[in-house]
Length: 272
Image 1: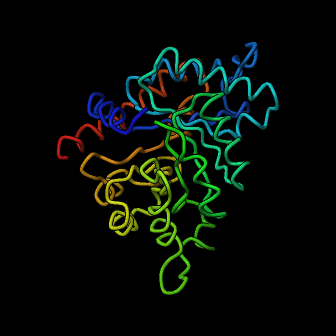
Image 2: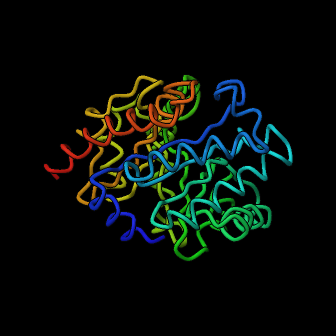
């Protein structure tokens, strides 16, 4: 999916909501455990109930890899279901990969070619030759960690190196990489005060923003400093939506939570 197609979907749906499909078998309704594939059954119900309210889904691959080959098959079935039934939806493999060049190429092939995701998250610590292999794929996006929402982000990301915070150096350096127009960035919602500085460096790039909802991030604060001319934000909510209920009404309750965020976004978009 191209950036322009993503923007068109945002405008059409009046939403820039991304729903995280982080499936924990200990949290889903117990009756689903009787299904042949409980993870896929859960995802399918969530997707069918919320697809009109969001523009993206983001499975965190750890929640599938933890269940071995069956979990990976559930991930494959989920992305195939999305691509076949809701091709307008933008898909994000939250895998946080990143390794030397030939290994990164294989990671990219796994997510872009085999599974046919639109994008994948990567870690920038190993530098240019670990990220550029992902950027080589046409109409695919690489979403690079920039400033995350976890407590440990302050261990490195905000430390000054030669008088400048490391996350700013990461952003500035990445702009010079080959096919950098295919880059997006992860910026945590719990660090809303940093968005103004980030927008000075990457004024038009899309930012994937986790942390709204269960992690305490505030949508209004993020949008105040993070919105670009073409929106430029994908706001992710995972637990706050998909685990709104653990009863038979879980999908309907998820839709209610998603609609609450979508309505807030619709009001914000009227002003952009």
